[in-house]
Image (cartoon, rainbow, N blue to C red; front, side, top):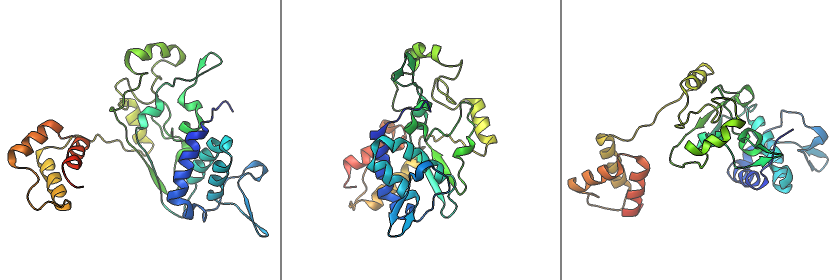
Length: 250
């Protein structure tokens, strides 16, 4: 109730999940109860109810796709037959203010059912109970690469619609986990790590790896070029990867 669907995004995600894990999900039984037997398929004289049939309904009926994605996520919390890994990139962005409005009020990401499906931390950084996995882990990566138009000065207009200090949920204005959020995450069994850029020795090891897997017989760079590339990339792994793929046959 009070949630907004994003059917196009939800259908896309369901199709990707089905393509990657559909065979396994068809074997896993549903462990939650649903009204009107929404997620079942008749096979001869038997009714088939699996996590796969949840996906099938979402793809077949896009208007229900966001609900299906959410129900699938909740089912994954209960899976014990296989270890479950849920990975979310740009995790901090799902706590940004949104450009959507309804009845004169701004719609928060918490109200967007598809996005909210992966919003596993509350505003204090605590892992919400319904998102805990019975057998598995959640891996989230944050980034500052993609700026939001709702950060910095532009965020001022949104502050009246949020509780003080709650504009970015567990994140601060610099898009880092707040100190208190980091403590809350740790207390609920989570771990937060900072990934720094590579130092010179790590950079050298990375170049050695690229040389091993490339088709080049001679070294990719001489000592001067190595120093120049390290200076240009600042040890950033993504920049190094980009430079290497543009200069080699990888």
